[in-house]
Amino acid sequence: MRTARERGLPILPGSDPLPLPGEEQQMGAYGFVYEGPFDLEHPVTSARALLTGDPGCIIPAGRRNNLFQVIGRLNRLRKTKQ
Image 1 (cartoon, rainbow, N blue to C red):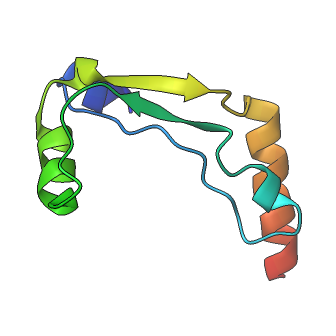
Image 2: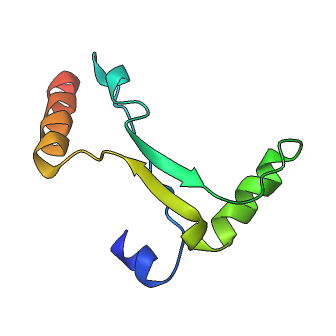
């Protein structure tokens, strides 16, 4: 992520629920707001323009997990795979 930012590449923040019970509560906790044109008739073209355009138009919104929450979630996921 740091390298992408340094290169001026856009980063689309978002919450990624894991396949675990209770993870559905994580959905939508973190994402972004886009300020700019978006053609609903041509969403793929608009999304591509969003990714290649001005990264300043993408504004993070919500609450990210902290390091301990991420480690806990990944640990729970690892235990279910054993």
